[in-house]
Image 1 (cartoon, rainbow, N blue to C red):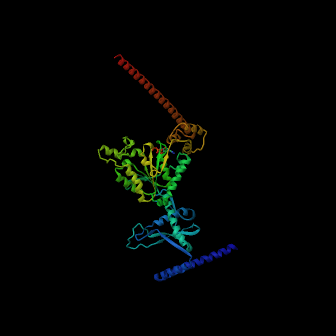
Image 2: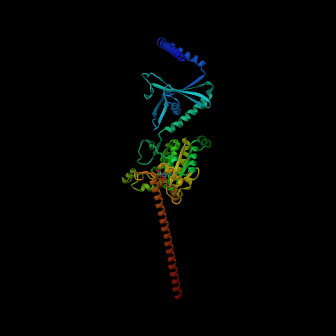
Length: 505
Ligand SMILES: Nc1ncnc2c1ncn2[C@@H]1O[C@H](COP(=O)(O)OP(=O)(O)OP(=O)(O)O)[C@@H](O)[C@H]1O
């Protein structure tokens, strides 16, 4: 009985819809355009009178020159995170500067949203605009114009206009930043990849994260906290009238993870990385230009600061670069051809002044990271708090650090050999790079146990070497002492002899 009723209702609904469609088609065909448009306006007004909702339209192309609207793009990013859960028809795309799949709602789809208890509805639509013979608009603007429509009850006009839209645009920006392909910029000679001003860049895809970094958990969490707090402190820096920047000094022996940590920082904050090679900068003017060209949400890295900047202001080539094999090909060629690559006149005061001053005017957040293997050799003026806000020591591998590496490389949390390794790491200093080297699965070391045994052997060898070295040093000290004693005795004997000679005279 029920199904019969339902069928009757459906057929009635179907015939009503058909009649409406027929009447609308007649209306479109036989009523003149001017009258039609007046009638439509009237219908809109009539509906608006009773309709409690407000609608805001965000066009994809707006303005006199029909440029792509930034607001539209940000709303698209914002909706992409909700659309994938709620919309039934989605469009998938790989963004122009992104490697991840970006989902957005398809045309005529609707997505509800809620903000501080206010219910809202987003819908995506498009309308066809007939191309005219003459147009001042760029040819890239399509005839099909897409737009988003936001619908909400008129009693929430204030909160939506003053607060919700701002929130959507900010969230959209955050999502867009997370989805974009990040870049690694460099200014060194012979660098490759597309250029942006004085920088050339390649895609930044380093997989390091704080999760894979071998370091004590507490120290790691402190750094993560510091970075996240900085990245959310726009208003605070504006309030105290300082440039939104933070300086980190990473120091420790080679192979302890300074570069790895920079990648982890960039991945945590979704920042670009600018690798600033000071030895390739000719003077302060060039340095200034390079620093101005850096974009916000970036980490500017100056590695081996002790080698790349001479504190008297004269160029001091990196020891690595003096080695012909490692020397950059362009620098090498220029040297061979006797070409005069200008001597660097980058000074410490130049660098510090720019870091302190230049970014106040630029706006946007920037982190500057200095690394060194020899912290004691640095000028205190360079590393004082305020310039380098946080000093982080990267050190030899602790047992906690080893466990992170064992998880990364061998996917194990525990093993009976861990105890031996803990004992050995308590006596021997080995860098995380060397520990990691032993934990690599290869065609020879096919399983975790072999890798751990290799590491134990390497630690024992290092211990043996340390013992031998200590013995040699002790012998050398003994020898030195014997020599000194002998010399003292000889000189005493000589002194005595000469005194006796004087007496005889
Ligand atoms: N703390 C660490 N956690 C995880 N891996 C590490 C760590 N330290 C070193 N490694 C491993 O060793 C390799 C070399 O480390 P990295 O280049 O980060 O060291 P560094 O301190 O920057 O060395 P250098 O002073 O010579 O530039 C890395 O690719 C990484 O695989």
